[in-house]
Image (cartoon, rainbow, N blue to C red; front, side, top):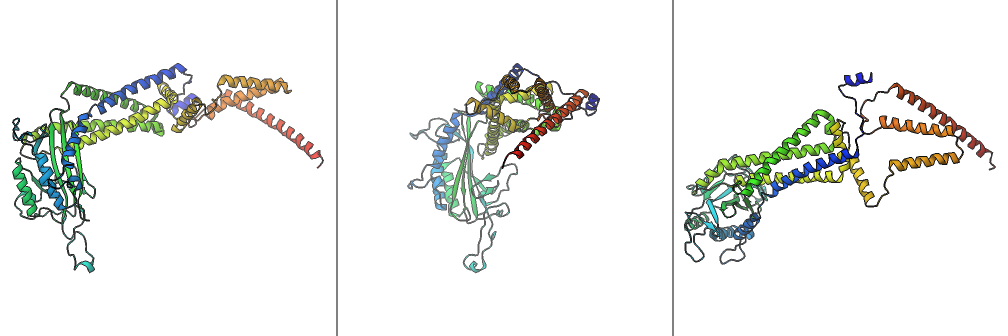
Length: 525
């Protein structure tokens, strides 16, 4: 009947869980070995893409364009720009001198530059730099009525709604005409605003003298106005010696409060991925990572099918799912970046007389690095759990292998590991094992005999203790408290005898208590 009831509920009878210590150790070692291989592969994949030359390339370029002072004014560099005058000093000085390297330090041409500048003689300027500004309209904010006689113009902070889309100034070249934004380009998050693409754009010439004349012309015709809110300076470099692209963005924000706030971005990235033998080792790690992802996904899928809604009651399982989601995001970002590089890199390198927008590729490559960094963080978090609570973890995995329901709680595992750690540090007495408990139980029996209890009372107490342990193990276990447990005839008989013995004990204790109370009442006050 019990079996029929369980079959009707769609379940299976629970197996007897008497797995040995060897099974626990073997399960734990297998899990740790497999996951350790996964961690090593993930670490190689993550840190193998980081090149020490990235730091030095960023350092050299930031020193050139951020720390170099304007001629005749040692206090003015890009970091110290605070006014429009300082900005034009930087454009005509450090920026111009930093971008155009057309001769060796002896003023002799060392090699054929092929109409391209080579910054520090080793970094090829890809295409031409681009300068772009975004403006806001007048009357985008309201002036208090009492002050309108003093100021009738008001330029609010930058938003897409406040952006000025009208041509201005000379209205001849592209720098005076508005260029609509590209929907695929990412927005820029600055200090005082979030800026989209587009705006009033011009590119620099390959000639240093023409570019300098351009800057003078823009300054004389007031290209920067009261409505200007941000100016971007974008250009890209490539160093063939270390196979790295350096994408540089210099940003000057003009807040509504006045003044200028500068910021910058230097991205040294490896867009040409598979060139050397070491790159192919990284490629093999990427393939191994995908294989691990398929295996782990299959395992978690089997657990979800087996345990259904009970699977989601465990915090540990949620950590497994989070790690899988991050792994899939990592693979997706990697595929997207490689596809975009394959589609765009060739076209960007062909147009040497135009601006090559490598910022889009660097932006997504940076997001890929961030995602894989978060992935390896949670992967090590899981590894620490495996190392700290391996005893409980091995029991759970052994339960998985024989089909037991995984109703364990993270708090219970942490408490068990905490107690084990305290015992190893000798901050807590170790719990008594079963042998000691049996010895202690035998001592209690001998003590009961010495105190005058007869054998019938001792045997009755021992029988009651066995019944209690057996019944509590079945009906009060925290691991199976939600499951339906049918009662057999033998168990019902034991329950009945246990209740009868409890009633006898209660009656016996009640009699003793009455005697004590009568003796107390006869005592003199």
